[in-house]
Image 1 (cartoon, rainbow, N blue to C red):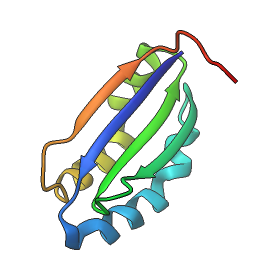
Image 2: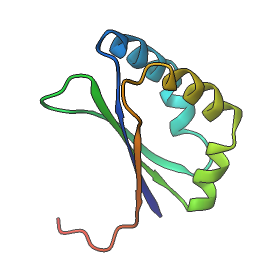
Image 3: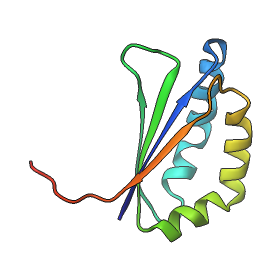
Length: 98
């Protein structure tokens, strides 16, 4: 499994546009083959910073999503709302302590 975190900073007046677009597409993203989990986070102090946290079966599954028409349409729109370049991180879980 691969964990992916994408940090995005939006123009303050574009936050609602982002949230509306996420709402319209979240189920399609979550149910894309290979996606096992999806969360949207908002920074506690900066209301225009959001992060997506997702679990993917493999890097190949994530890449298939990134090559899909769904990703291309969502990302093409989302990029127009940014005030800073996004940052993406990929990781694998080593250990979990309940």
